[in-house]
Image (cartoon, rainbow, N blue to C red; front, side, top):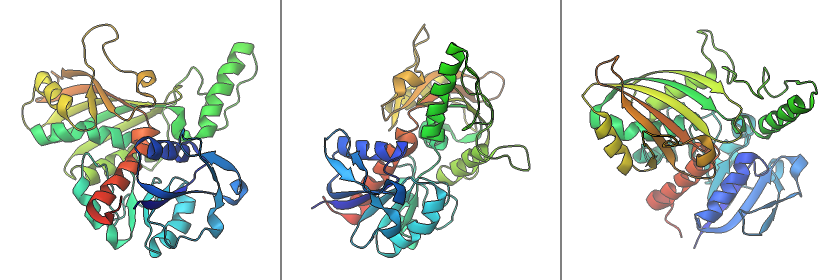
Length: 341
């Protein structure tokens, strides 16, 4: 016996990826509902590459009764309005927006990092999926923290345009074409030109000069991994379609060598170490796209601080940063609590 699963935001980049991951991982589904806004009602989306087409249902009139799990990827607005309604019927919501992440009674889960935290989901029947850049970061940090205790992290991100949705991907394509043919370049989805450029600005600015994306990385890492960790981030949008990259500098309480870190990361769940000190001996977003691993490269010791390491981390933001992590949460929920399939 399997689950009845609703995909909310089924027509978006992450919603489609959620259906792809559910199909690939053979998640035990008796029924899958594609749920979207009323303007998509009646349109069809494919369930992964199975050839099975699902007709979209309107979220405004969707009956949540009898559904086991709802994977939400429709933004904070729909999550605010409809996630509590779904949860009230007994349907467990796994939400990809930032709305519930820092609620003290909502677990924020990366299964390889803090699986035990899922046991608190019954307080609200809602589980939060972390920010895409946070998810890959904590997968890389967790095994190293266990080995040598992290004190401080400085991270610079190189985030792909797919993190801004379909409109971001379309803008990179349109602007790149416009530059080649000599047409005007007009920023719409981003604040400045993204083609052949980088933009050190993701989400809104806060009073201290940081952006909300940078704040998310800090507070979410503390909630997921350890509140004692100090973290500062600079988040940058780059002209890459899929895949977020991060340059991570870590300061530890205890001594740890680059060789020890490599050995740990090679065996760590969710991590894939590709670290040869030669041309092409590292991973870039192109190689990570379509894969679920968090890739680690360029592990080296930082001589400017005591017990310091620097590394390079790349992951498909639509997968581990969103859809895959949500499905892994659903799998964890099934193993520990729902007991079907």
